[in-house]
Image (cartoon, rainbow, N blue to C red; front, top):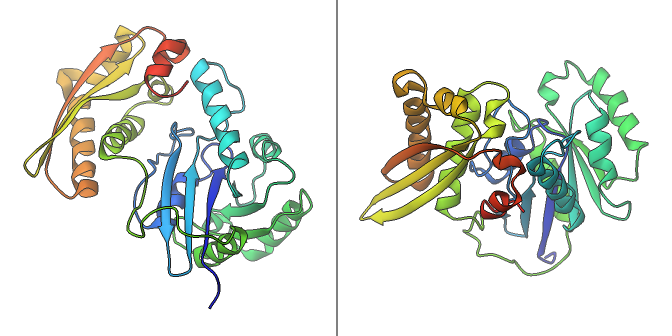
Length: 294
């Protein structure tokens, strides 16, 4: 019988290549929030997959922004690089048939000595293997990767092959976490993340990046979870957009988030949400520190 293997896998790549969708599919649980917009992920999220012969500890980092305009974006860029550098294996996620400046930046942030596996995601959109093979060949010339594995986070195609490659790449050793543990984050953290995800879906292209969610109170009342949350925005006009006419937008966002919380937590949730203005919070290092970014 082969020895048990355990190690950390830092997921990196440019924004919107499907890193969070991939990690959710690999562990079989929604732990990283997803949306069609780039840079939805802001925090390092640990997702744990334990099998009979290995434990893989995935670290989902923010996508590395091509241009960091605010203190928040600069912090996210540092976290993206650290996730891949400090783990046993770097998992670079790229989009099938696309390798752009942001992909080069993500690859260059990984030390040359680091074990690196490439997941070519979204192959279900590639329209034929005859186009995919030359793309994979070009990738293979960029660096001596451990492996390049075409996958689809949406359909699950080739994910068992990717897991086999990652298991072989991590070192031998005992498990770091109990076999039934899926993450090192608590329910309070996921309540904030789920509410922020709904903001990304409900609002326009720019406003979600000026919003943040804080959990003011999270308490158990028997089987009921009572959650008080605040959405931070930078200007009074943004507050009006989040609230919506007659409070309709905020009501829809809160309702969608509450239903997702109930599915994740396995119980009823009572959710109160307020919207507050905090001027230029994305460039305020004191506020970023309070929010756990700096």
